[in-house]
Image (tube, rainbow over all chains, first blue to last red; front, side):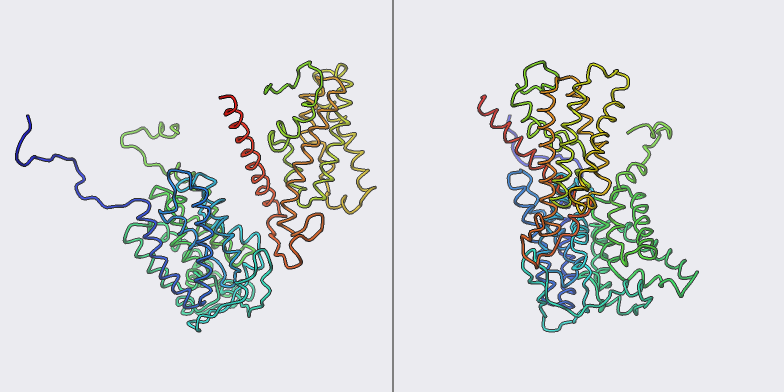
Length: 341
Length: 215
């Protein structure tokens, strides 16, 4: 019997839905990287834009090519573009474009696709690319120059070195704040670090802009605020203890917080949803581990900066953290829980 | 036909030699002998000398293992094989510096370490201790050649990217920016992984074609 008139529609909750899939989250991160990139363009000129394009092209090409026959081609969800953009932000502004492109290819193929694509990678792909470049071209990856804010978009000849060839153009190089701290025990004013008028990679200069973008992402619940907060807290605490012990040997906690890639790494890379823990308690442990490793590498290690290795090492520990911080099911025996896989 | 015919009493044939090159390649299929594969393949020259030395030890020891296979007591067979292998490793270890001191220096301790190369012990245990001398020699030749080809392939990739040269001949000209990581141990893993990928891809394509022919 067909009924007439308005029908009563019965559904179960939820009635209000938010479109929150992978692509939405990834594009949110991409948008929040735009201000960081604009600051990089202001400080380093058109070089920043070219480097970012090269990295994104290097990341997107294998993502499209190797996934073209697969049903879930992940080029559109923007995760590869994040990888490319983040990789670019970790590079020195004098990196030749072909190295940036190669870094993008390595990041996506070795860092992500070889593990089974998005959601399956153990390590943060951008940092895998960066670590490869650091190991392959140590000289090019440590050539820093002072930023030239807004100086009519200068372009450096080093960028345009032919593929596989040495960049032959010389630039006036300078040490990063962390390097001059480590090797010359010279500190840099905190105001310079906050604004970003120091030498460094594209994205490690302006602390304030990165923090604001991170705040936006945290408010939109795109990133888990516990990770950066616990990293900052650990670094500040350890640095404060060491500064209290011997102010002449160790840098101030604010110097450690605002210098180098700590801001970029803590806000954009450690919070990668794939390679960070899924439990809230795990996130605190994860962040604390990164903080400890950063201080250990910076103060006692041979390298001036250690955020990249700290995050990669803790990425490797993520499955372990996830297992040990599993929530206990209410009413379940404490002992039995241990034996379950 | 596609069974691995390790202990079959059949007559030796061409397949006894050829299976070491492709179907049962010690490096790319059996993934044995990883220590020299990862450690000394940073240049083509090192790889080639290492491969030839391994091949020499493999062939000579397989003759002796095969000749004495009915005399060696089962309980001490591994120790006996190691003694036989060590004898020939010592020979190789003295021959190499006599020919080229430079290569000897760059190979370091790895020639002496051939004695623990599991390709050699594996063939002694799995093949020459169960087969007549002639067949054992053919098998050792095939396996040795397969091993040599595999590590030379690795050496080509690593020297080309890490140095820009092949056998010290500059391929990319003097301005080449070397990929330092490729001559470091990490590069060996990258190159080995890439070659394993290539071999797996060829094998898969081959079996697909066979299926198409059969269907």
